[in-house]
Image (cartoon, rainbow, N blue to C red; front, top):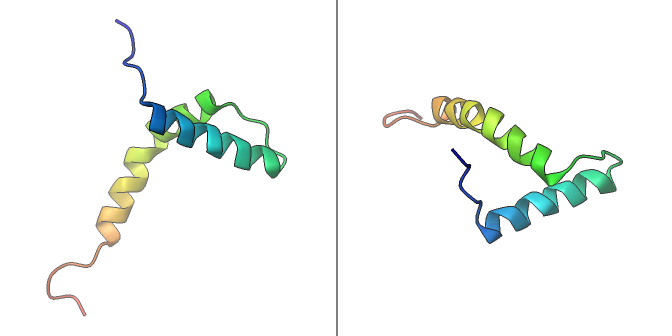
Length: 58
């Protein structure tokens, strides 16, 4: 089974992240950034949802 191709917009974003990391002296490929987002993205999203204000919170 092959992985679906990622959209041009997403691929461009990943390359921009790669360039920003390189500016800071961190040499990573956009493919590595893509793997990080697949691995840690759901965890980060879950944590953000937990911190979201609930109705009735002040």
